[in-house]
Amino acid sequence: MKSLLFLVLFSCFWAEHHAANSTLQLDRIIHIHENGPRLFLEVEQTKIISHRGGNATLPCKFLHDPISAGSASHKIRIKWTKLTSDYLKEVDVFVSMGHHKRSYGSYQSRVSLQGASENDASLVISDITLEDYGRYKCEVIEGLEDDTAVISLDLQGVVYPYFPRMGRYNLNFHEAQQACHDQDSVIASFDQLYDAWRLGLDWCNAGWLSDGSVQYPITNPREPCGGRNTVPGVRNYGYRDKDKSRYDVFCFTSNFKGRFYYLIHPTKLTYDEAVQACISDGSQIAKVGQMYAAWKLLGYDRCDSGWLADGSVRYPISRPRRRCSPNEAAVRFAGFPDKKHKLYGVYCFKA
Image (cartoon, rainbow, N blue to C red; front, side, top):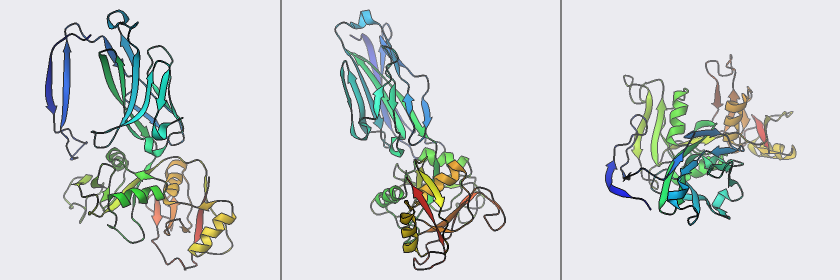
């Protein structure tokens, strides 16, 4: 049983999301022990990096005093949860107590304990999905003793701005989530957008992020993108009404299992002909997220404009050159042309 002298309740407030990000007030309880804790966790790394389709081990080991804790009478309970973007809710991932083990939701059959030693509570996640990205909490309980640790799972990938055929600033938050999903992506987090900005992403249109905020990254200050005399950074509109407010969205995608390619065809195609041409080749017309992943992660380079599933026309350039994005490596956007125009090729994806 824990022997406590006293406990202190205090508020940890004004916690910042990097520069200029919104704040959040949290309550925290600190337990001060007479003889120190008898069970505590050790975490070798607080951030693990993997990719979609890969595996990851979130490290968590516990140390305890088996005599004072009474190991003979108390079973050790290990619980893993995922913290949501508002930091107030948790999603159950995995629970283990003795021979009883259970995984939850989308994690079923994909998570297990590493079990390298009797005090190893590390969680193994296999066949990682885009939705697995985020912060996980390891909690170990033995009798009245317990301790927790938080580990982040990051994914290699690419952030890109997106707006639909109807034009810019037409998506509420829920529609933005669906728009990213339709393009084989998820709505990006602030951390993902911030990392993309540090790598050079510059976009002057505000877009939704996964926490419900609206922001945009600027590396080259200019009018009307915050002002010519402002410093580079991620501009923050704050949290907006998820049902009524309308903006673009920043999507995130990672590695894919399949083949992305430009279909060699004797003639240019309308949109419907492009869809059918990919089907006839044993694949499907590619999505925007798949083009960005192929461009960023595989170095895909093709100077041919081609239809994509959302009705847009784009082409990926990894090696800037004359007439093919001469100044920067980028996915070039040719707009949403009339689907009856027989002017373009098509990009396909074979899973």
